[in-house]
Image 1: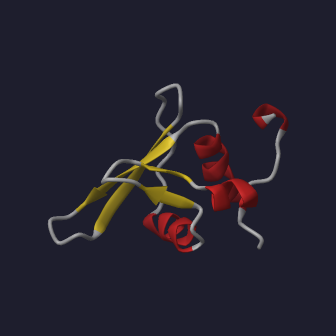
Image 2 (image 1 turned 180 degrees about the vertical axis):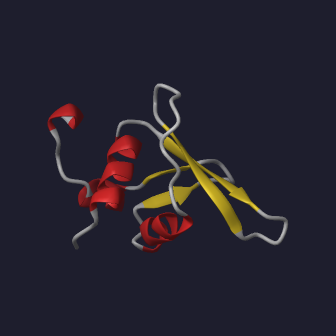
Length: 85
C-alpha cells in the first residue's frame, strides 16, 4: 500500500520514538493533533485528516488513553531512510 509524503514524514518521526497527542472537544471531535519528536521538539501541525488516514490504515494506535504511537503495521509501511538505520 502506498502512502503519501506527509504520512511518510509522520511515520518516520514515530518510528524514531516520537508520539502524537490529540486535543479533542468535549463532544469527542478532534481539534488538533500535536506531534512530538523523541527529543521533545514539536512537529509542524498535523492535520486531523492526515491523522484519520494513518489511524484507518492501522499505522498508529493508542493504548490505555495514552499518546498515539506507531504500530507494527506502520513500521511495515514506512520506507527505510539513512537516519532510521
